[in-house]
Image 1: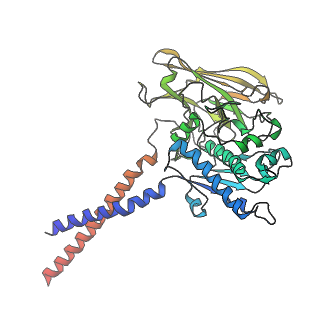
Image 2: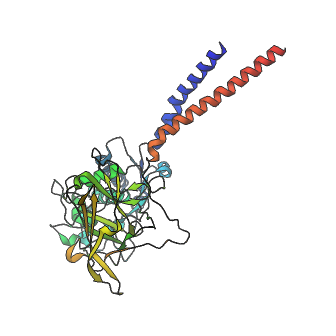
Image 3: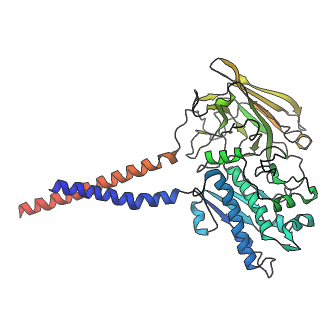
Length: 448
């Protein structure tokens, strides 16, 4: 009888923990939280500011709506929480700070993504305090601030910068999506055929962009992971990105300290693989690949962006796409299969290549997959001294020589099993304590 009671108690405890503890743990981890710090907007309350309380409330609402709309296009409804509730900041996956100031010279930008950070900055002053009337007037209607236009601009730049934290790079200059609009990840979000003098204000104010297909796929793949940052196996050569200067582009860049390169992926087996670079995963390990979705070759992933402090050194590989002969199989790039062309001499005398060609031989097929990177991404607007080198990277002081091995599953996928194990352990311990208590009681009763 006592054995049956102990069994019933154990089962009951498991049911209670499954019903109460596990759902709470899942709630804390999912969906990922995107925290938007909108406190900077409160400083615009008039007087002495220039927005009414209702305008401030509306502006906050529509900025959050814009960001949520874009992220849900990638990960689906119910899979993201976008909020400006300060109590959610501590466990947010990503953060956006809307700052009531202009960006710091010499770079004038709508917003920025500090490399490897989970927090991006958007500068409210660039929309509302720019001395160029063509910029500020773009966010007004009949001389008054238009919260919908401001929300379009701030929401667009916030979503653009959030995209970078999930490994999404830029697409080519002037890339248009199926609706004919410049899409979310166009570099700098600055081009407009209608009014170049607006420095992008007009096109930011009047359009609600979405992520293109490649951006949506990348965000979905990296959802729940840390911001991307490349890692290096110091035993092998790495492609070194030599950042000489910014692109010579007009208007307000959303980024600086980066190199944009046209990306081409080809070869008889190209459709069988993803191409990527070794990077740091959400577990702090070295099993993460920046995947470039190759669906619709040449239509989406047209440009790769190398950021200072995030992709200074890169080592390349292929991974077999799902449902192929090589699914999940890694093919590191042999050192002799990376070639540099179109060398230029930088002002300090160093040589860098403007063109990189990589090729993989797969199962006896020579040149089965080929990747080219062209630093002349913006033609005459490209900085002529940005380029690449291919060398061994010196091990930093106190650094660790990392050996890259076969990737393991992401820890996030193990969470349910960890929780289940914890539940079983708790139930076992509780049952054991109860059993000992009953045994002592029975012993005491016998002695009496």
